[in-house]
Length: 123
Image (cartoon, rainbow, N blue to C red; front, side, top):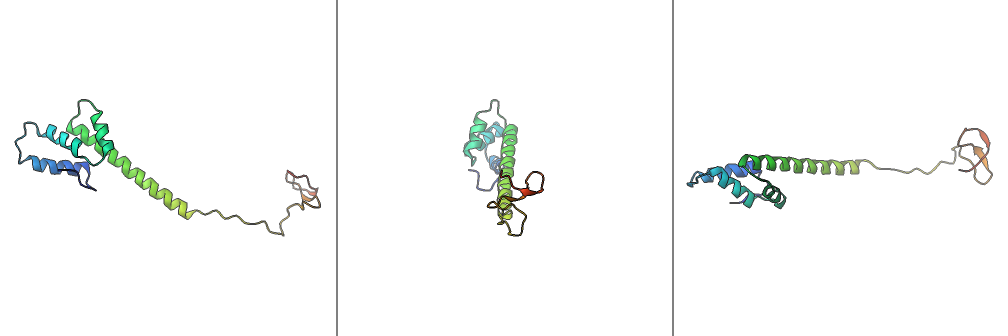
């Protein structure tokens, strides 16, 4: 029995518990823990669980829930980022001829520092 696509680890453990009722396990929690480690969907979770010492079924559930929550949050953040990118658009306007920008050929216009009209000193 393996974890199905879209199935949480808690749902997978519930299926394993129901199946374990038909077996004569001495320690059902240990056997279920081993099955979760062996048959979980993600390689990342499996590696993380194998790196832990004194691993219990409760600890497996805690680690798996945390990873599932992180994956869900990361997915939602990615979706929000895509929405933001599609909503915000930068439009560059060309300067209008009626604006009071200095005439670079004549050297006359408004000073960019003080705003007075007169000789223009380029930046």
